[in-house]
Length: 260
Ligand SMILES: O=C(CO)COP(=O)(O)O
Image 1: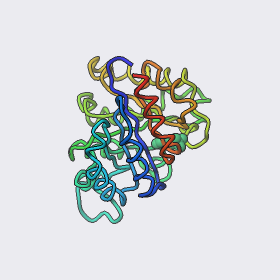
Image 2: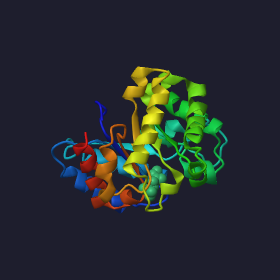
Image 3: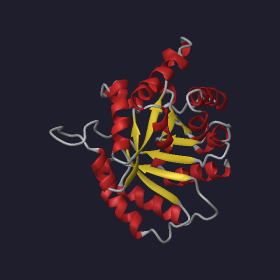
Image 4: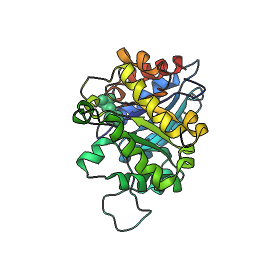
């Protein structure tokens, strides 16, 4: 995994609870012997409370690198956008990261690649690190269009912000057919795509390509994480379902740290 520090992010989506946050913090408090970078992305209404819990537990969490992230942000800075949350607000409530362009937002909420690019730029303007999600549908994979789809989603952002903006970003490969299906990509499939994405960035800047962390997401669980996380271009995971179980998520973090 070169010298990239592993990162495991929990995307709770519209699930989870304050009780789950408490359980996670308790479990992370007991971790010793190194952890990956861990990012919790709960529904935004929980951020304030979880930030306080993290502060209260900061002494016992000193062995862990535990951060908060948003699941989405507005592409606007502020104003009359009912229901939206700005990057500045996420920042104010302790977020360091924000997920951008998750396939659920692209598919269900009509987020175009142009809007995703705008959100990426806005996140960075607000001092947040974007976790940019890309991924192909099953139909695209079966039609041998995987790389074409991924290139399109990646290039839309690159065209807007340029390669140097990827200095402060994380990329996540989430094949749509693996999300919430229990059917993960094989380690070989994940590695093939991660290597492709890294090469595409390296062609523009070898330094940025080598440096960027590329997470795999899609039915990651304790039984498949070690094989996925030890692939040379897989730098950790973006975890949905298994992040809603404190024991499983902490196990995944331990596996990621051992894969370093
Ligand atoms: O969408 C995902 C994370 O963003 C993956 O979800 P699952 O881990 O539930 O497949």
